[in-house]
Image: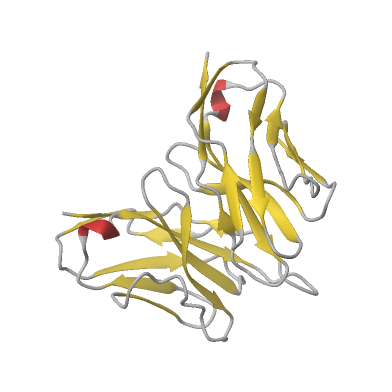
Length: 112
Length: 117
């Protein structure tokens, strides 16, 4: 069935380090892909999205490129800040459906 | 405008009791979703409402779980005879249908943390 796999956390980095959180998916059809972020004590927020192959989503310095050939949507940021500490979720939705299929989440901890 | 709101924010209940969780979606959003998030895990789909169509209840884990929605407004998720494994954060989200198709962006409420003792 359709699924999303993302790297296990927690991921611990120092401030200004380069971040990659891996996300791969399995889907029948042509999904749209999303990264959601959950800051401590807050609700889930959409971080970025890409709706077709080779699209790049970007927001707040984060980027992810929809790679159909590798079925991946890895999240990257060039220089992380303490305020980026949160749980990050990769998700997909199929054109033929309305349910978001979620990865398990990756906790990111940034140390000053 | 106001975002998705949920109440209560926290609920502690004894095993065997019934609980009711409430979600107020963003005004004008036709789609409403309920999810469950267990500690350290991803989101688990429970139920989906779209306008006046029959809801998709395929994610409800047992017949102790039910949900209602009046038109395109408030929704309530009811858990009867709660069990300890029902302890989780229950999240509600809403979205609007964009012109020509679905808008996939879901806006989430802050969740209700349910603890069954």
